[in-house]
Image (cartoon, rainbow, N blue to C red; front, side):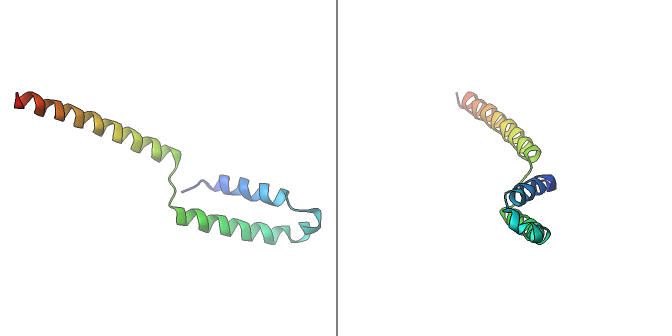
Length: 78
């Protein structure tokens, strides 16, 4: 899931870009944008960078083991 601070940063960027006349309803807009972003990111099923890096390392080790096993099979077949 996306870090809550990133959502807050996006909400602040969005609300800071609002024209001055809309500042009166800024709190309501912030609440709605925050809810929309959270719902959208929840649907995307995102992972953190840390989780991604861990899975990348697992995949790398798995590939190395597969290559070693393939070489062993070739050697045994000789």
